[in-house]
Image (cartoon, rainbow, N blue to C red; front, top):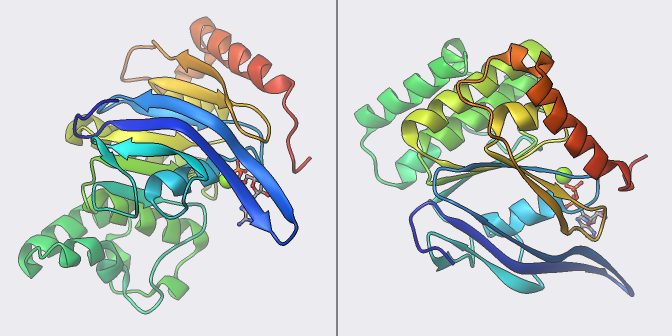
Amino acid sequence: MSKAKGSLSVNGVSLVYSAGEKSVLALDGISFEVRPNEFTVIVGPSGCGKSSLLYIAAGLTDATSGHIHTGGQMVTGPGADRGMVFQAYTLFPWLTVRNNVGYGLKRKGIAAAERQKVVDYYLGEVGLAAFADHYPKQLSGGMMQRVAIARALANDPDILLMDEPFGALDSQTRHTMQRLLLRVWEHAQKTVAFVTHDIDEAILLGDRVIVMTARPGKVKADIRIDIPRPRDPEIVLEPEFIAIKRRIINELRDEIDETH
Ligand SMILES: Nc1ncnc2c1ncn2[C@@H]1O[C@H](COP(=O)(O)OP(=O)(O)O)[C@@H](O)[C@H]1O
Ligand SMILES: [Mg+2]
């Protein structure tokens, strides 16, 4: 297990959900290691436990067995070393956009002037500078998601845990957010664990794509993406891209998607 800052080690993680008499094995002995600054993408059929895995890494759910370490420390709860962007919009409804984005910075004791600078920078990056004083209920779903992304980035965590963060965005905004994320990732040197069901997105963004089996989720394949960066969006038309895409689709083909 790596002790390096920004490393993410998943060791034999299993998760059982119990509801009354019934119990559901959601994750079954997942292990993988993410190097500092590595961009790892996780794909798998619906219901295979991707969100559960990120919740465990975030410290919001306890594994039934196994452990996750970040920077060599065992995860026992949420921490400022990890930033999260989840599917559901998790903004504070009683705070303005500006104060949502600056929330973590304020908690860290960053002075107001510095906070303002960082918040304005990231609000500009996600195209929401004009909405700084709005409240979440005044925004569309996609805009709220962009605020959540700005908030995670503003906190400058070592590790970003992102669960289908762009799933609710239209394709134009999605591409803009993908470019923003890559720019921040390249400059600020972050480890990313990113869940998506969009295979093009997985290959465009990732250093590596982990394919999970249907529930109970296990690691089925771990595919390195050696396409040089920066990756032009048109790369999706190139044979090397299509070959990787075919491989991922083949890995997923035999897995049953719970929602279909
Ligand atoms: N709180 C919960 N209680 C019981 N079962 C749950 C709970 N959350 C998720 N599950 C079940 O665990 C499995 C994995 O869920 P999830 O992690 O959301 O998968 P994914 O994100 O890959 O779609 C699914 O079968 C889901 O129904
Ligand atoms: Mg999910």
